[in-house]
Amino acid sequence: MKKLTTLLLALALATPIFAQYNTSQQRSRYNHFDTERYYGIRLGLNIASLSSSMADMDMSARAGFAVGGVYGLQLANSTPLWLEAGLFYAEKGGKQTATTDASVEKITCRMSYLQIPVVVKYAFDVADDLYVQPFIGAYAAIGLGGTTKYYTVKAQDRYSKDSFDLMNRPDVGLRIGCGAEYQMIYAELGFDFGIANISKDEFERVRNQSLFINIGVNF
Image (cartoon, rainbow, N blue to C red; front, side, top):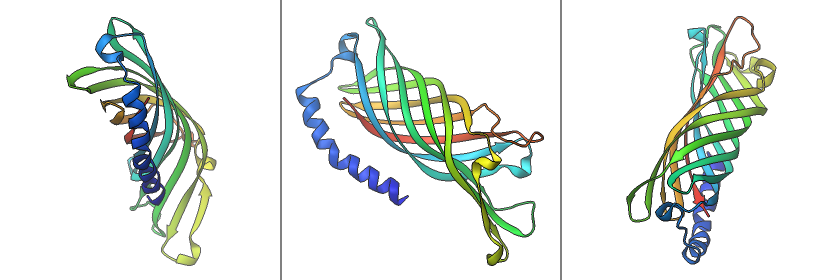
């Protein structure tokens, strides 16, 4: 959370610079449907969990951060329909406090991914310079690293493992959500539904799930 707070503060300090740029380079892509493109930076929060085929192995939500960039391209000059692709560093995983092992009090799983989301979004003009943008698409990701920690009843027996000794690194899923843009400022809320089984255990299926909240700027 300290890292996320620092990144959000940096974005807040950088906003006036981008605002000055945006004032001198006003975009007309929504108002006039000109074939256009944009670039953006994003900082955000993932509230991630793990869904298992074994109910007692589900992991509840834990927070992680995300940071990345996006590129958007208008698909037609007659409608505000956009294709957006991104590249993100995203933290996922989960935690479990009621374990099947009586000697283990809690398990926390952290996994970091390099993630590529691709979505189609439509921009609704709701007020002066304010656009609401529902979107739907998919993502592909590859695991970079992570740690699963086991907190035992006896502190001296606590231990950890590499998360990807237990899970497969590739992941794919569906993405749905809605964004809002006012001039250069952008914010979005969405959900990633993992559809790939990331478990290495042939008797168990595990999928990533993540509610995400991102803020950023487009230019």
